[in-house]
Amino acid sequence: MNQEPDINHRIWQVVALIPAGKVATYGDVARMAGLPGAARRVGAALRALPQNTRIPWHRVINAQGRISLPEGSRSQYTQRERLEAEGIVFSRSNRIDLARFRTH
DNA sequence: AATGTGACTACCC
DNA sequence: AGGGTAGCCACAT
Image (cartoon, rainbow, N blue to C red; front, side, top):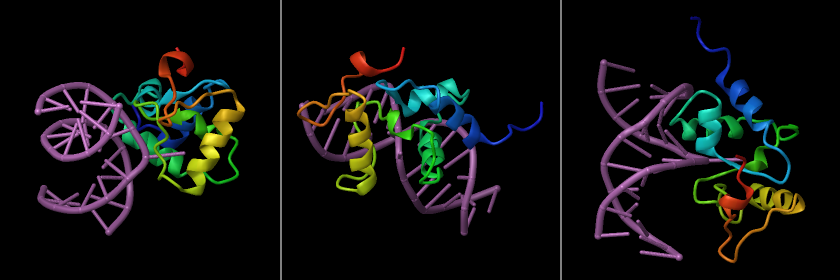
């Protein structure tokens, strides 16, 4: 087989499949993209997205149900706002109940 | 080829 | 529950 086209594109394509009001973990996305174990690579792919992208990058969170962006950063605030706008609830400790909101 | 890096994870206290 | 740590993968230098 040839080399994979562009891994970023494959990852973005998977992220685009996450429905509004649901979330997926980095590990979930990696597995769905055919890259099991490459959760960190998913973060790199999202980081490479342009600001004006339509890809719903905000629906990707870590395995602890938390936002992985730096605390207090603008992007972290944006991600939380978008998730809450879709009906996702954050616990008192800033965590999302994966059993309830994770795509399955 | 070797080393460093990170929007990550699973484990183990 | 929360913090530390060793793997992890693909890339960049």
